[in-house]
Structures are given as C-alpha cells and as structure tokens.
Image (cartoon, rainbow, N blue to C red; front, side, top):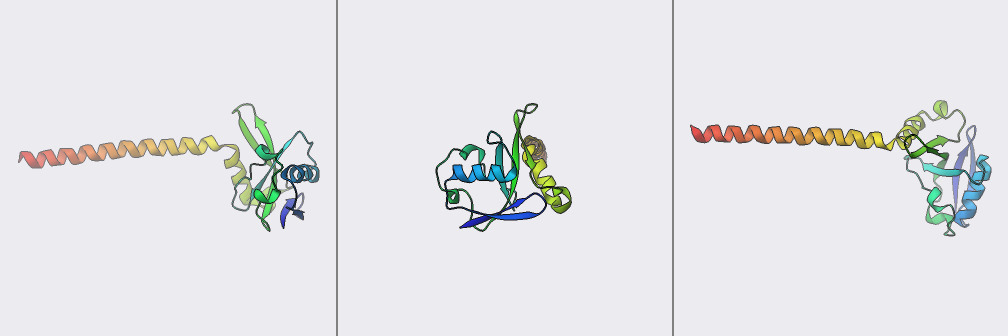
Length: 147
C-alpha cells in the first residue's frame, strides 16, 4: 500500500501507508524540508484536503486517512492572523506553470469565507425574488376575485 506525493520540480515519490500516521507526517515534513513544528497537509487531485494537522499525533494507520495509489500534493499550512484562518501554500516549485488549476484551488482553500459570502448573497437575493414573486401572484389572484 502506497501513495504518490509530488515534490519540488515535478518529482514524484511513493510513500508507504503501512505505518502510523504520526510517523508518516513526520517523514512527509522531512521530505518537504519543513520543521517539525510547521504544519503540512495533503491535497488530492479533486482539491480535497486530508486535514493532517488535526491528526499529526495520531497513532492510527496512515491508510485510515489516505487512499492507496492516490496522488497527493503537499501544502504548508500557515496561520493567517488577519482573517484568523489558515492559508495554504503549495510546496511544489513553479506550480502555477505546471499545475495552473492548483492556483485557483489554493485561493479557494485559503479564502473559504468568500464562498460563504457569495452563497449568502445569492440566498438573500433568491429569498427576496421569491417573496416578490409570491406578492405578485397574490395580487393577481385578488384582482381576479374582484372582477
């Protein structure tokens, strides 16, 4: 059981999943050149995070979190003091040229509130338009009953 991790300049390495998650994450940090205090996460090809930060001390098997034979992109997790959220930075070199889709995925991951605000805005407009539509229908029904 293994996974493929993309590193640096389009380098790929296969890592064994038959180990404890704590050891897997420690090795991943070493391979990425991160200090053990820094946070690392993995993103799969669909843009989903594996949320390794919350599991970095887990003794569960790595295979309980990661899917065998899947390809993952390592990300450094940084605290964003301005938004009190997290910012994700790709650990691939020249990722914007080699993986242009990654730029947009990282932007969305680092700014999840923008998506919620967009949804709230659309939801508010939808409610208002539904209310207006029901008022118009009520007014038409009343005018038909009056005649």
